[in-house]
Length: 151
Image (cartoon, rainbow, N blue to C red; front, side, top):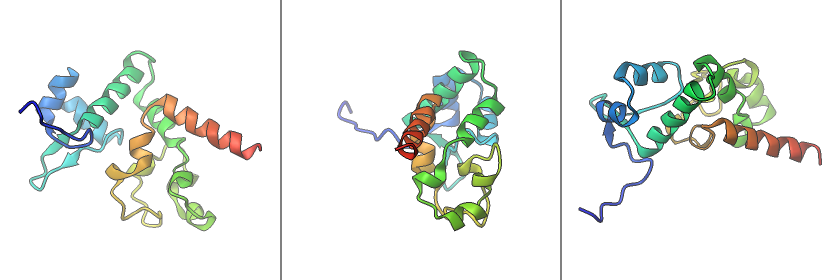
């Protein structure tokens, strides 16, 4: 049993266990999901399961709320600044059809726009959702884009 190797993105924790690990309530986890901050894995029986990476993401969200005093709407605003169209290489035409590109506070992984390039993609697997889940990572990414544009 000591040799058990789990991938960090393997959904194994039921919602009750995730809530206990995070020292928060189940309704709080469901609210984060409703607000679009997290995308839990759902089993065939519709049970929510969380991975180690999901737990880390929620810990960062909690730190933003408790430590940085950022509201949920503020967190959504930060996440909406992620230029997902750069990550998934959308053409200008694809960008112009997409709500995430044109609207404020639209999280790309919450965007159900049928015109979006990635409509049929699994957002839980997308690098936009997985790689940019903290203010620091979003800021570093935006700086990289700004730096490249000024060359």
